[in-house]
Amino acid sequence: MSFTDLITIAIPCYERKQYFLEALESAINQTVRCEIIVVDNCSSHDYFEKVCNEKGIKYFRNECNIGLYRNINRCFELANTEYAKILDDDDLLLPNYIESFLKALEESPNIDVFFSNYSILKLGKVKPHDFNFPFGYMENGKEIIEYGIKYKIGFPYMTSAFKKTKIHTEGEITEYSFGFDWEWIYTTADLLSFYGNPQELYKYRVHGNQSSSSNWIYHLLTVPYIYDMILANKTSDPKLLRKVSRNSFNELLYLKSKSDKKELDNVIEGNNKYSLYLRTKLDNNYLLKIYFILPDKLARAVYKGLNIVKRLWKRSPIIAK
Image (tube, rainbow, N blue to C red; front, side, top):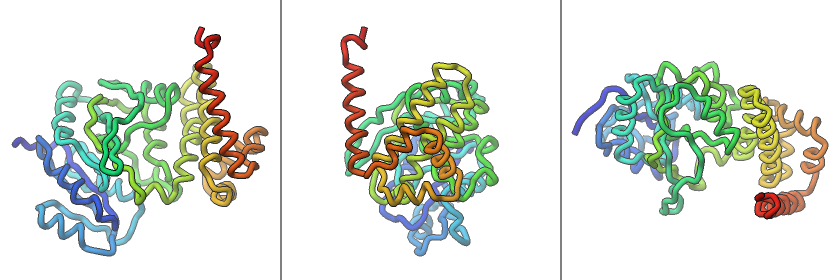
């Protein structure tokens, strides 16, 4: 079995034991081997260290919990290769991920970000991920930005391998980095080169103990924030700008429909850039302000009704013509 010294698979972990071994073994069982490291964000137990010792994997432990994204940056710092692939401790790599990365790099040597399509693993069942990505080599990420506007924000950061010299810096990460991965990608995409592989080389696990679930309302809010504060500044095309405006409006409706009023009030009254953004949107848009005042059940009913109308409108033979 061949070995490459171009890339490291780095697994950040904290507390959660349930899926770690399966994730680690998916990194070990690659058709092309590479360096693997595990970076423990100061868990209260020694399970990760014991497993790594048994498997002969390099293990690092932070002296204190430095936060999710800072621990990811720590993974990049500790990787002694040109590229690094972050593997979440509850996800899985397909056996040919590293092999596919190397083939892409041989074909296009100037890749800053390699990403792939992926499947979703939930309750032991795997289903394809239904999304639109541009694939192949892209000298810059303008297509990434355009696809985010035309279709939907959702760049597969978790499937990506990054050139270490191009990755986000410590100073870019703030206390309120709830959706920092997407925010960083869409901010810097036009400065990076990409290679997208259409194969499903990654399995993204959905479960109740995901790190994003504790701040889910902020993750929802990150999406309209990216549309308005980032993507609106990345294009001068009037059609795309109108699409940005519609997308952010729809995502804010979705946010209200999925949120508890008490949780949402806490966000609105918060002291971070996302809270400021939401307050500004509500102050400047009367319809949104009225919608956000509605009781939760009524807001969900209105959102459901709007979606039904939207689907019927799209199916109308008059519209189809």
